[in-house]
Each structure stands twice: as structure tokens, then as C-alpha cells.
Length: 414
View 1 (cartoon, rainbow, N blue to C red):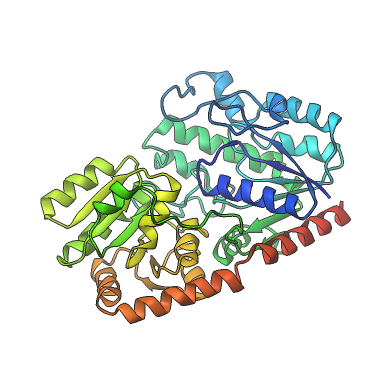
View 2 (view 1 turned 135 degrees about the vertical axis):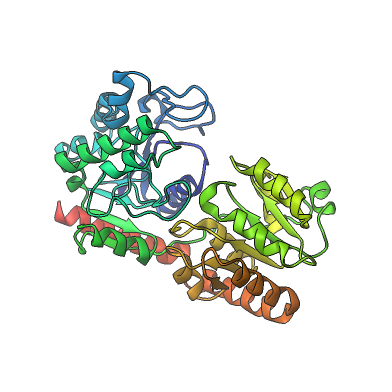
């Protein structure tokens, strides 16, 4: 089988890209042919399909360009992407196309091109973009479902994207364009990594027979944790600690995590990662005289070593997470996880490997942390249970078997 994978980033920017590359490698190991369509970028990995990639476009951060009508229109529908993909399909026709994060830089303008070429389409729901203009069901301060019922104008009214009316309005316009053109009707199956996101999409009118729950997996070719990596970082850590790793941004619940740790003066917290909240979090930790250590961004081998030595991993997210690698990686290493009761997190640790606390409740989180901190045998038992879940249930073989089955159904229905 020849599978075309489409994602706007062709380097490991986040969890979506990690899955994008991992599933591509896993399919190739099975003997399938895999091609790619993406965007040009200085950090891209090498690819024989790079000549067909679309030009680099930045819509956030430094160099962002959304200040004129052409840029705004290409943000919603990219003629360049449609033309580039058509050229690729003239050279090589896949049996099925698997879409990932295509918004803005590539856009759903490629879906009609695939349909005209007779290529069935499946798409992984890595986020809530098709029912929430800003991706996350989080308005910058709290969980948000104001756009329920496809009332997308509320995104602009609440300035939910970076506090900007103009950017939020553009996201609203984009959502209404997608609704009016019904462009996503061209996707045969949507793949939901969590039951939570599957239910959320069905509640918003997506047909239940088109939204398929496909549990995540931990890639078999992940490098083993190397505890000797990053010796200077590891030597600077406490002998015993809990850890958060990931982006330091409002939806992650990190302010509340610091409040919980402040109640447990004997418990050190190590925070790995970077993001817009870092300086504010560091200041808050200093004021509370909490035992919090910020490492900043760490290369993957060093991060694995830091996480592997932790007493527990905490993900206190205030937005409805899907099926984050943060939890999967900790479980794979036998480290127990403590997660909020948001999104797909409870169902992921409900398999084993962690406990759940009530979102926003610092006292409840502190109690869960303290339980693991004081009872090493409990932490070890739950950690071992998490490792068994990964090795017995969330396997690459199971995932690829189920994924190929979906591909075959999509091809048969085309």
C-alpha cells in the first residue's frame, strides 16, 4: 500500500510531528510505501519529496505576516498547496492520503485535489480545530466551549487567540468558510486518539461512523533512556523530585501546580521546558520560596534521563488534552503520572499507570503528590502497571494493524 502523509511541519516540533514521523517509519517497516507533503522550513529533515513542499509561511511569532488581504486569504485557502500537491500526484499516486496538521500553511484546499485524483482521505484529530477555531477549547484563561453549535463568531467576540480581535476574527472567518464549503466532507474517516475527542466531535454533528477511536502508541524505535546523558543537568537535580515536562503556557495549569507544591515544602519540583509563562512562573516560585527548579529546554536523551529518575510526573492541564506523549512517555519508563480530569487524560491513566485529580484544585493535587512522595512502594507499583499498559496495550503493532484496517476501509469505500 502507498500512503501519502501530509503535515505542515517536517521536523519534530511537537507531539503531532512525533506521531507523523513514527507512524511513517512503522508503516515502512511493514513494507508499505510512504510519501510526504509538507512545508519548506530550515529545520526540515531531508526528503525526496521536498521539491513539492509549499513555501514557508509564518502566521505567529517573529516574522508573522497576517497584515494584508492576500496573506489572510492564503491562511484559509492555499492555491499554492493545491497546485503543488497536484504536481506530486501526477508523479506518484498514493492509495490513500493521511492528513495531520494541515491548517493555515497547507489548508484543506488540498482535500478537493485528492478527491478529484481518486485518493481517499483519512485525518487524525490531533486537536479540536474543526470544532474550535483556536484549536484547544481554551480561551487563554479557562476551558471554553462558547463556539458549541458552530457559533464560531464567539471566537472573535472573546478574542480567544492571543487576545487579538483581528487574529480571532480571521479564525472565525476560516471556520465559517470551512462550514459553508463543507470541505471536510471529503475526509472519509477521522481518527480520534481519545474517546473524549471522538465524543466531542460527534456531539458537534460529525457522523459516528466517520469518527474512529484509534488509541495511541509508543514507537518501538524510540531510543532507550540514557541515564549518563546530560551529567551536569542531572547532578544539579535533587535526589528525589517530581517533574513536569512540556510547554510552559497558560492551558497547562502550571500556576496551580506551583500553588500545590507550595503546600508541600519538602517536595522539590523540576520543570522542564520553555514557553511564554516561564519568567512569570520563576518569579512566582521565588516569591513563594518553593523548591522549584527550571531546566529550560532539554535535548531528548537528557529529558528522558530527568523524567526517568522522577518520583512522579505531573500534568495539571486546564484544557482538555487529547492523548499527550507526556503521559505515554512517563508510563513507558515506569514513572507514575498524576493528571487532571480533563479531556482524554483520565481514560489514558485509567488503563493503569497514574491517578487523577480535580482540575484547578491545588489541595487535591497536593494530596496526590504527597501520597506518591511518602509511599515509594505505591509509586513503584503504579509505575510498573503503566509500563505494562504500554508494552501490552499501546503497542506499535496493534496501532498499525488497526490503522491499516482503516486505510483499507477508506479505499474500499472510495
